[in-house]
Length: 252
Image (cartoon, rainbow, N blue to C red; front, top):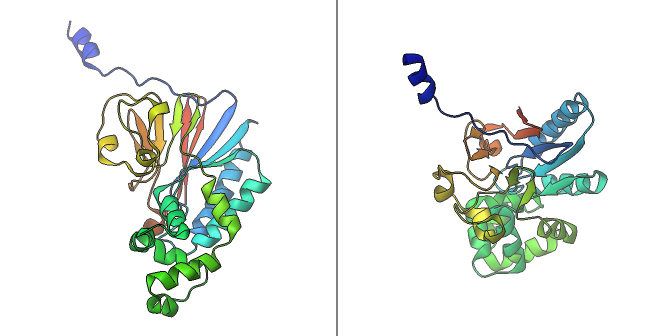
């Protein structure tokens, strides 16, 4: 009788999740201008991928390529070229890409907010010196950015997606609004949501893989997996590998 009671009290095993058949995915967390860490992680991914059986390998970047770290311009150019040279490379638009593009478009107050949340480092990476940055007012800074950020970078960032779905997984930057169908999610929530998503314990339509919220290690929950390990502060840029019912972690 005691054995039966103990068996009954055990939690049910989590259901198995899998991406689309014959697909291997590497979901890369927030890079935030960390070009050196990006190069190291891409080398690790290529070695890991080569050691596994043949599959359609997909790279999904979860957003926030820019800001805070030292070389946002280098990260954007590296990944722009990677997308040109390699198949199955996809990008989600993070809140920092959104702010960057708004600032470049001249949207009111966007540049001020952009600079407050790490955009200064992005501006410096495009060739503005620290001394010049400190002397420029916001209208002057907007003019300098307009002159320095290549059109190819703007077009690349503007083409990022809001959500990517593969099998039982959905990939977004920040999270989703709980209890709202995936097709009805607002782009603002996908890029900015935090507490109401992170604190939700119920099931989502898919297993949600996201960045946006920093944790020291990959944050695995029954309904989501967070992959932002704060590369700009920790030096640890992380990729979540997914294939069949298996997941694994690579990081710098």
